[in-house]
Image 1: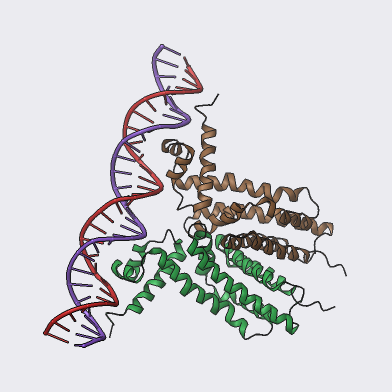
Image 2: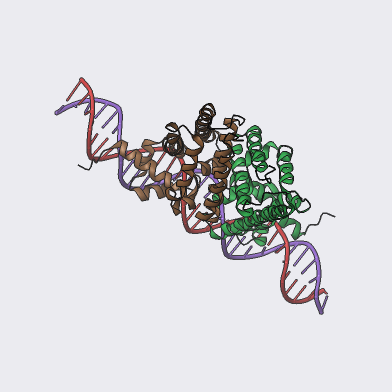
Length: 203
Length: 203
DNA sequence: TAACATGCATACTGGTCGGTATGAAAGGAC
DNA sequence: GTCCTTTCATACCGACCAGTATGCATGTTA
């Protein structure tokens, strides 16, 4: 029953273990030996599925992280017609969604972005694609909200979306450094207030 | 005339070269050999002035980076009595202050924070001190602005300051990844708008 | 069953890195 | 000048790491 040969499973095991090792230590400091030790997978298997360490990193961005962003931040927006309220709801859920561990390690995408974009152009572009997806998804939601009258028509959807994504990264960054959920809370609270200012003027 | 023996100068040379190497490659990936090669200083000199690589990193945070934050972000606030306007002025100066190179490499403090805080507790605390200095300096300015009637009395100065510092880090982070000044501009523009909302209600 | 590709295991290599051991000049104290 | 400390220079070491060479077992095809 335990498939002694299950390549897809093996690949996935490597991907997920590598994701955690990289999330904890960064890409360059991540040790392939550690990953292998924790999974029981051998070096032969790893280099059978990935040509080198870089390719492993690329796959993590393309397959794991992009998927997380989509599921966590974009999917909920699709079914809502008030993007501001929807976003605020997501922000309020953060304390329950992000465990202490997640605060401690920060945003995987932002970690990789800061570490790798000056070093490796391919890495940078793949990360950039995920950020674009995120920002554009949010911007679309704002545009629709403007049509519905739920969002102030004077704001620039893409610029605003970019700022929000950036702020989120920043909040998680300072929370990571201070190792405190409460700082994360304080920051998201300010972000909530900012979102309120994006509503149409009621006077 | 060329002081063959000038320990203070030697130390400073090492510090600055190390700062640039670390800014470019991150702390862990920074190579001492590279630093030595670029400066002409030898390994003996380096290990005379610093017990190990970590101590070198600590000194960079304590002496160089903390000083940069103070000079760039806190000093101007001291002589102003309208912190919002002052901050907005600083934000508008960013495009002229940050060269392409600085965009590309991102905020030195945030880079170090994300890389080192899960790895080394001493590093984390020293970085945290700089962030605290920054946030508290900004918060003080807001408090005084509240007394002067330049800032809305309903906002929490420290929370707001923390959010702004976080957002700044985030903006510089996405700008670094996208390697574009224009994204930095778009983000700071939104930040400018946010700052406007911190003014007292005029109605 | 024969032939072949896929999936994986083991042992090894070359290179880099942080750190150390040791000693020699330079400079001040006396 | 003598002694001692500071300031550096050179040579070296062990550890670790990404990547490779090689071979074997498993699954697939014919």
